[in-house]
Amino acid sequence: MATPPSDPLRDPRTYAVPPPRELKRERKALLEMREERLRDLGGLALEMYKRDRFNAGLVVERCAELVAIEARVQEIDALLDGSALVRRGGGGAVCICGAPILLGAKYCASCGRVLGGGSVEARPTGSDAVG
Image 1: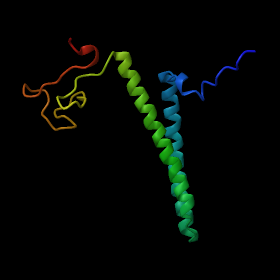
Image 2: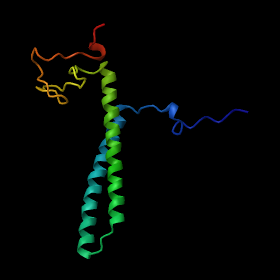
Image 3: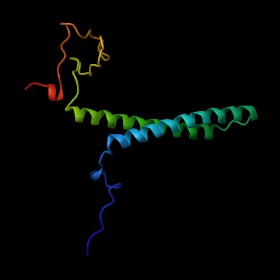
């Protein structure tokens, strides 16, 4: 008797990151949903104020939904950033403090060191690394 195939959605060992186009589509839909929920929350708060019947539990519930949406958008952003790094073969240059150097930056966003001059040593990572 054959064993039933495991459910890939329930088995964390078989999780595969969806293609970037699907992640981008999901991200766009989530951002649209977030904007709609924010408008609804504002309308809800206004109606509760007008009727002098504030329901803190309902507001907290709606805010929790918004926070969950934002958390998922951040997860998608992290997945997209990671997949972009994999496709490029590694990240760009990093400051000596270890923070990534953003394109066109004059100072390190993490430690404040001046970038682009001879005084700052940027070390390459990923496929740019030597040795």
